[in-house]
Length: 143
Ligand code: CA2
Image 1 (cartoon, rainbow, N blue to C red):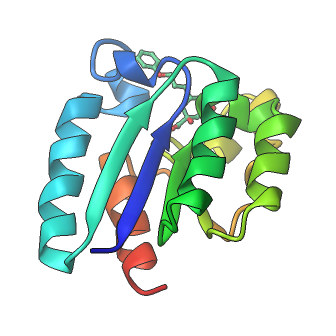
Image 2 (image 1 turned 135 degrees about the horizontal axis):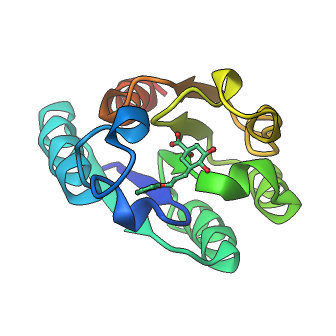
């Protein structure tokens, strides 16, 4: 069965506990459940991970290619706006990466307007809360 990696960056383990007006009420476990349900319907397997450490995201992007993943859905959190290492890792693999965000960074603070992830990703889905993850899975299913 084709596998899709879903990688989450810093602070996303705290989702659902604060700032629901920006990020919604769903926890990362809630989103994982929704992704697993939809993946089953699509005949896909999802491997969902979160880390607060930049290097873990780099290692997991490499691993996705080594394991011949169909796609990576990546919410790199604040590393989106800072990490050339994550940008380079996306460029270094052939596996298509879809950038996702719960919020729409373009209508927030100016420091969120730059995305090093977006400059390397196949495409971006942002601003739809937990639905951003499900829309990205729909796209990945069609790769
Ligand atoms: O909208 C997104 O998905 C973001 O990637 C979320 C990141 C933010 O730095 C990006 O600009 C956009 C932050 C995630 C922080 O998660 C929180 C969880 C609980 C309480 C507060 C923040």
